[in-house]
Length: 120
Image (cartoon, rainbow, N blue to C red; front, side, top):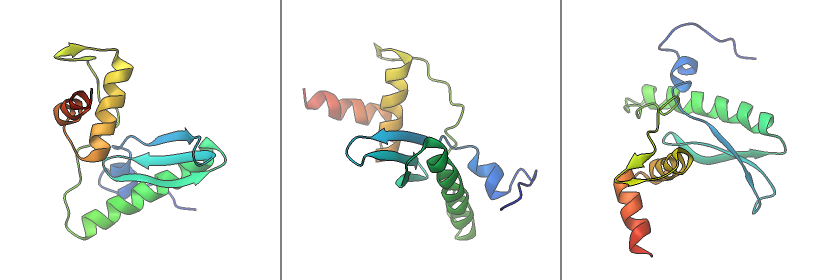
């Protein structure tokens, strides 16, 4: 078992900057974990806790790899505040969902919304 360090630059500390999502997938019949913009769907399991534990380890490993290879880390996403508006007022939960989907696709929120509206 890894021990957690209090070093603010450790992979574990840096990995805490990223929102980790565990969602049920009807298609897969299990929970699936992702942590955009670090990594998309990357692990699955029977329980949320199982997937969260795996996902946390994966994000820490990716942070360590990115730093080792000299790649800049993306901006942290954990704890980000969502205002609930961006030209059109929407519920904060919808704003968050759209923002995370855009982030997962490597797009800005404006690009994501423009593409979605183009399909209407």
